[in-house]
Length: 121
Length: 107
Image (cartoon, rainbow over all chains, first blue to last red; front, top):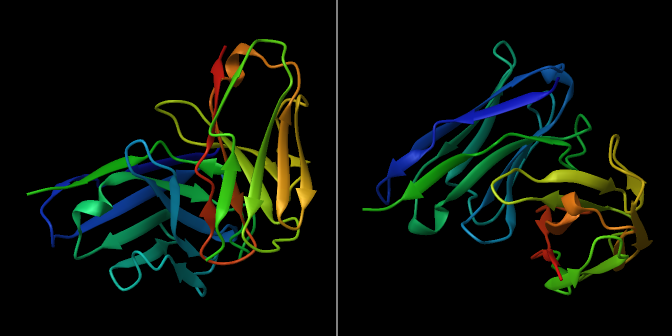
């Protein structure tokens, strides 16, 4: 079955960096677009980034543009989110999610369980 | 950015009830809308995509309608497992944006 497992979260100081990973299995990773979505405690969902199936299209939310990079490793069926210059307001549960299309980036049909990022001094 | 506004924020209902909630987009998004269910401590689950298409495995008591700027999610014959928070999400343009959620609680 489809599985998405995030890792890499933790406590980091303001200005620090983290690299989140999302290990996938149960589907052909190379034909699906992928997203990162976050949710601050008690808050609504916030879409962050999308990468197309082949990595040629990438889109970012303004709130993280220039500070994060989405990437994927086809050989390892893994999605990444490199986050730099972290701020307190980045504290959230970060989810990876599969898009049911290759390059449309429209919806999220499978989600991981999330990895918690806490930005605090 | 396209703003998504959901109402009501909370709806109190009983098992067996019919529940309706709405989502309004700040501009025309055609049928590019999805609905998700989220229970505490778990990831969201896709229920409806393209405004009215039921995701595989989702019970038929869930239905979606609307186009343009106004959309509705209806749950008929509410079941105990349906008490959760429901989010809408527009898929018309980047950035993808979500509504603030409607919580369905036990009356």
